[in-house]
Length: 145
Image: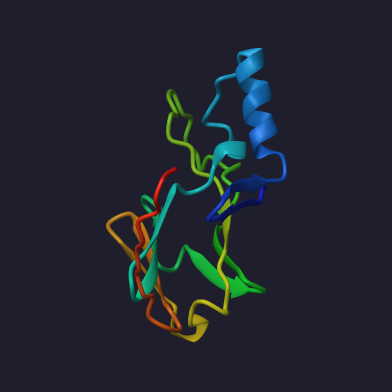
């Protein structure tokens, strides 16, 4: 599995980007490959909390594991092996299910990790983390010389 870490400054990974670039250059466009299996994530911050939404189609709350450790919030799903066909002989198989792991940096200095809430609803995982102190939004116009 590739560990992908998101921060406010972009994506850092341990080889996933290199694999994607290599496959693009060599013409390998097999995006059903397990190396590309990780949930798509949207994260935004309001004045009260951080909200993370991840796509988890077909999964239930019992399938997904959300953990926080050392300023890393991880989202995991471990698929059981599907090597046994249970007497089925597939004539077409376009739906591939694989395990995934996604990790995001989340500082315990900024968020109240004891009040993290996660729920799965309609194919989406919603994670909310309250800010320790409400964010004060200020603005200032900078003169351009």
